[in-house]
Image (cartoon, rainbow, N blue to C red):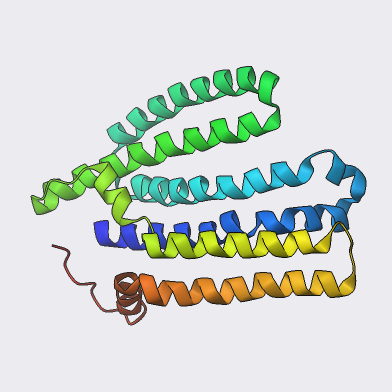
Length: 222
């Protein structure tokens, strides 16, 4: 169960990282084409970029909560409901206060913290449940660390972010077909490089994924 959780979480996390790192370079272009320059000047591209960053947290939390709900007892679900109620009150309080000073971006950041707390809670439950079955003591942070992409993949995404942001600057606020085409080409190439980075830096993940698709039992973790 734990190995499948790590595999699913890492898959979701890497997909979200592609949007989080590469997506912001296309938020301004998207808003300008879909809604016009008025929305662009109102700061909507920045909020869209923040929302893409937020995807990283909501993706991990979604997998963690899904696994929690699949294996948790009624008592555990009630405890989690109380926890989320408390976290939601704190989220609404801090989000409202900081939104007065920092605007809508503060609400996105507050919700990202909300997702982190909930994901850690669920991962803690999954780690404890697995420890009872296997006898191996593992914390939630160790479990989430295993589900986090490697530094090699992270640095690759950071480099792709710099590439696409540089491509965006070359557009110079002009929707010239050639500039837009080159910018979109940079995004397409970034997706190809990100896929190659998975095979280069996430070899253990690739091997485990192949076994799942072949319907083979994943190798037992040490």
